[in-house]
Length: 228
Length: 123
Figure: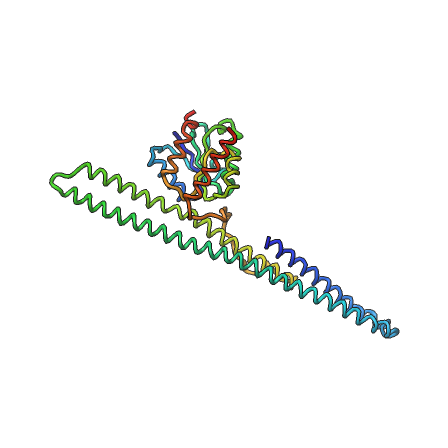
């Protein structure tokens, strides 16, 4: 919605600027092209001048108003987008930290189990049943470590989203620059390079996986029940 | 039981394949997107586990194409994805997905969903 408002404001500003440009051209043309006419009938030209100036003033006021609106819309959009991006990056930091802590905890438990296995092995009569139980638990711990690595896929999507926001904001700033100067050479500006096609879910998160799974289960159950 | 595991993240493919091995399924084939998955799918595949967001062909597009093929009409499709809003889940169902796992998942959830779809896979 904010994006639409920004585009509308930009469009209005551009249209208003074109009108002013047109008025100024007319004013300029009046002075230069029709010098003889102006000299011949100076009263007519002078009588037109206030009206032309009034029109120019009106158009300039419109442009200023549109620019104020554009600035407000751009500011609002940029802040919103950057806030979302900031939140995503913070979540990436948090997710990687959580995963690292989970893996470290699992490592500690696994190390302890290996020590326990060594102690069991050193006994005169090793308790095979206990050792078997420890190995099974050790495998579970190793699996916990692997499962924690799922954060990589989700944080990749979050970073891809943050990158897309930066590219979008860059494009908008270029559009604004072009609005003020049509000669801006976008090709001559070093822009963000998107290395490859990336697909991502902008809502990807590591948070509340159980709650989100419960919602998916609920929807599948409800749809199947209604279909049956 | 042969599984086709489709995900553009190599890490996720390894996690899913290792999870499958842990619950007793070692016959797997993997693909990095829907197009590659379609090329690798044949009647020997009994079960499909696919991600949603992938380049070239998404998981839902892949599911739709698979459902239009004679050899893919009845194969169970389990979607494993980070997408979890209601509209997405409904879209996946419409595409022909049989069940849905939200990332990050636990091996227990994966096993439950596979067990629930096994009768269809065995048919």
